[in-house]
Image (tube, rainbow, N blue to C red; front, side, top):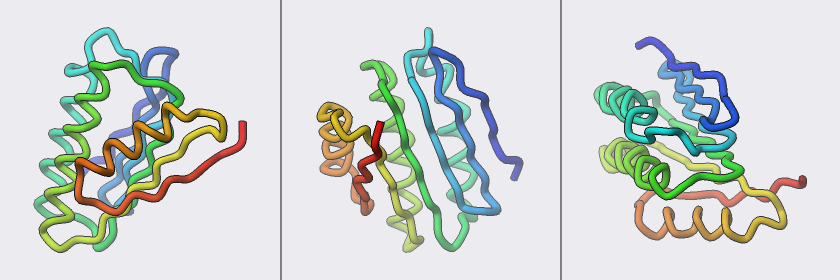
Amino acid sequence: MEPIIIEGTPKTPSVRFDAKQGFVEIKGRSIPENSIEFYKPLVDWLEQYSGAPAEKTVVNIHLEYFNTSSSKCILDVFKKLETIHKAKNDVVVNWYYEEDDEDMLEAGEDYESIIRIPFKMIEVED
């Protein structure tokens, strides 16, 4: 499987999905013009990856900000990861948030309450 590598812009996050390494990362700001269009290839990639995932999949989510339409798409990403996890594969989500960003911490906790995957909340300094 080919990895997905997307450079971040002021409106879209940088993305690195690597099947060989079992590594999934979304980082930056997510306020694309069309969230579904931006996230669909990522969800499709995870669908394909779920057929033969790495022994352990590490997911790093480090978003400064995301809008409402992105939040639904991010949930779709997590649902694909949950499918992988339910198939007895090791999946860990590292949710990064700035130390004074309560909203981003709460967003991570909200996802954790919906999705049955272990989350690690990781506070980073500004």
